[in-house]
Amino acid sequence: MQKGIKVNLALIIVFILSVLLLFINNLTTPRTLSNQELLVNGLFLFQEPKEISDFSFESSNKEIFTKNNLKGKWSLIYFGFSRCPDECPVAMYELSKLANVLREKDFYMDDKQWILITIDPERDTPEVIDKYAKGFDSEFVGLSSSRPMLLNLATQLAVNNKMPPMDNNGHNHEHLDDHVNNIILVNPEAEFVGFFRPPFDISRLSLTYQSVTQSN
Image (cartoon, rainbow, N blue to C red; front, top):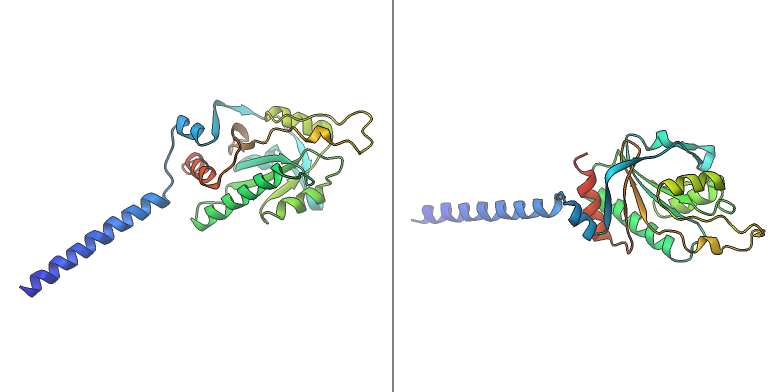
């Protein structure tokens, strides 16, 4: 009789552990969301990816970053600047939290990269913007280039950007105040596939980002 009770208890324990493991697996395994679910959670995907023409930016240590550096990796690109008072630090902080969450989940990171492009190249040198980016995460890369190159890429990625006033003389920075605060998503084919819309929230960012990049 006691042997039968022990066997039943053992079976119950095994059953409970199996259910618990299944529950934990469901919580930690990213789910593939529909485009509507992605949109509700802040990620807009285009029906067809958009090609990006070649470009050339510079990071610290004279490292050149071109379209070829986007190939083979999922890239998150944010346009901001080092003297940004509010929106940029918030977005960059959320991206740093996303990177940490993914690492904690042992998410595959070898084909992922995180890029900050300055919209203030007149003041943000490659060294300045790269140092600013790495202040949020050591894996982040900060890039700067000439104003025409910036405008070319920003236009392709649907990021509103303005020329500084002709009589600026380095003092008027109002042209920096109304840039589009989206996080750009580029696929491993170096194509513009969509963007994350503010307000940014780590739970939504993590959910949508993993859904899109997990099976690719």
